[in-house]
Image 1 (cartoon, rainbow, N blue to C red):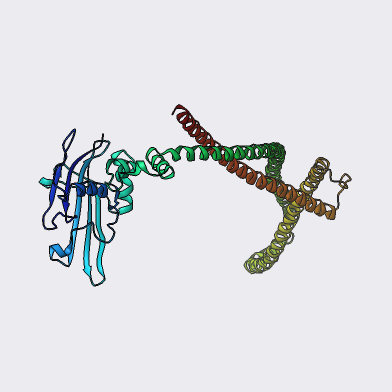
Image 2 (cartoon, rainbow, N blue to C red; image 1 turned 30 degrees about the vertical axis):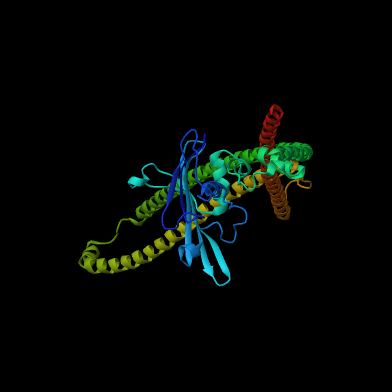
Length: 458
């Protein structure tokens, strides 16, 4: 429960601006007694000013502050300081400062610094004080909430000025307005009107949301169909990729087998050439042996002739050596030419074997390529490639058509993938928005129901 603690007044009405007058309030009742003009009403006016920010009637020109002429000053500063306990038990302090200045045209009043703060119990001992606000409008709104009563109750009941105390005898329209302000009756009628308007808006929004949900359900069904079609296309593409991988593996196996066969054929050709060379050398040695046997013969003649020939043997030997060397050189040249011719012959034989093997492998690859073209054309419904042999132009045309088909399928797949992703993102975003709006509507509906129950219970 809220309660007042102390009130400090300086420079208000008859209170001097040079010293501070402190009034302490006791529980449960504080009685203020004094002569007329001693300041009893000023205490109530200061309490009302401290809590609501409203000055007494007819005091806007500076009459609420101590008269500067009596103080013999050109400017008088006033202060109202109130310490109270809020409804939650917190000790609070509100300070309001005013000043009035004497000018040629008259008195000019100003509102100076205002403070609403937490009143620390150790402030006299150097403790800290936390300021809540320094704005007049915020302070005027915050203090009634802290005291737990409305501003109308503070003005018309608790701190009612004696000049305004006859309001219960006012005319019915003004009286009704006073009672409505005190008991806040208009707040409930405004709340009911607000609830009705809010319910009408929510019903319209709910209807629109239902229609939007039906539209989204149709779009979701269409998206599911597209998703199924995309899954089928993905399965087809996967099957084609598997078929391509299998064909590629078979092709690589054939390339490896061809390489092994070519290596074996090369080794066989080398062995065959070596055997032929050895046979040729053998035949050559046989011929040289037969020629040597034919060239060796018995020398005829008398002893004198043989002696003469023996004496001239060295000369003949030299002549024969020269002749033999010449013949040896000629023979060596012929053998070199023959060896060169044989090497050329061997190289030509090897080249012929390689070309023959490559021709067979090429024919086999052409046959396999035609078979693969027929299979692919049958599977993809491409006409005009079932005959054999296929010309080069036909093969180039088939590869071009197959590339176009693959690009079209890839383009269709990319378009479907892009459309599906964009649709999924849009549907997810719309679904999240609808969920958010639905949760907000549910919370508002729950709050509205609670307000209706509270209003009905009151």
